[in-house]
Image 1: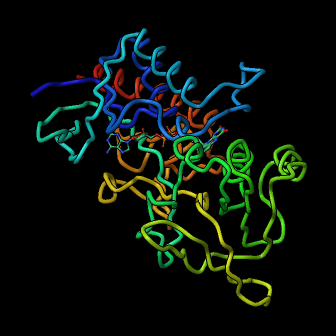
Image 2: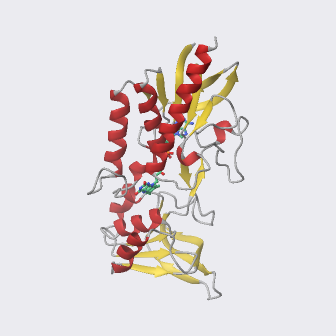
Image 3: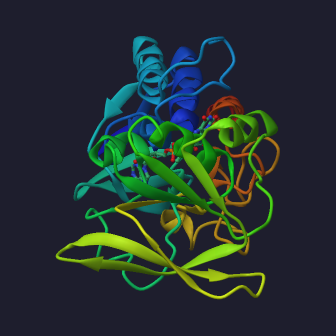
Length: 311
Ligand SMILES: Cc1cc2nc3c(=O)[nH]c(=O)nc-3n(C[C@H](O)[C@H](O)[C@H](O)COP(=O)(O)OP(=O)(O)OC[C@H]3O[C@@H](n4cnc5c(N)ncnc54)[C@H](O)[C@@H]3O)c2cc1C
């Protein structure tokens, strides 16, 4: 069975940074990624809050640069290689990947998160037929059409602004009467004439006909009557769910399913570290994922050294 020092599971910003630090320390480091490296950030058009890029850069470019840097320093990448199982094997971990087994001395879990669904009638039926979670991927399909963005955080508002490049009208539906998004993003949103706000509203149903979305039924959280909003597409940005299923039986999770870590990235299981959006840390951004990836790798290397010294 192949044996590696550090298995990084997930090739988003947290995993890519952990791999960079581990590989530069000359640990045999393999990144297992179920798709292509980059993570969630490749689904956004423009990132303007990652330090070192004053003019911003595309999410795709940022993911690609992080991948190249980790690979240049010796990290080995296995793409389309989703880890299916992690089992303890003495002090090591046995990973099942594509029905093959790999032994890792240390695991850094960086499996990130997936966007939450609304769980309303019509959402599943019209996914890919007008319901989307990726403005960069699908925005251009709505040129001169009317769309709604659901959510009030940074991702929702940034993506709504991006969608105004294509759509004739972008409705923002938010369940509260104020946005959570960073103030400078809000300012750009309120200045944009194509955007119309729908405060204190929730989506009750996605309506469609002939295999495509035709509108959404909105309920009010402030006692107003329900209303039907005719449109062609709906983009959902209402938060994320942790991808922590691999470690449910191995380490402690919080009540929402995020992996609990200490300030160095150690989980409740020795030798198992975690970083980025899969963890219970508050700010879920590229810069924090990268920083936590670096910390987890640093601690994982120290743990590995101590283990080897005590043999
Ligand atoms: C639309 C949108 C816009 C955003 N805009 C910004 C922004 O402007 N600035 C900012 O800082 N942040 C932004 N973010 C947030 C940022 O993308 C995330 O905080 C960051 O990507 C988290 O990195 P991560 O490495 O922890 O997880 P992820 O990016 O989620 O990466 C996890 C990776 O693990 C892989 N994976 C999952 N399970 C397995 C498995 N079993 N085996 C192998 N691989 C697996 C996934 O395929 C994925 O590639 C945005 C997010 C979204 C969705």
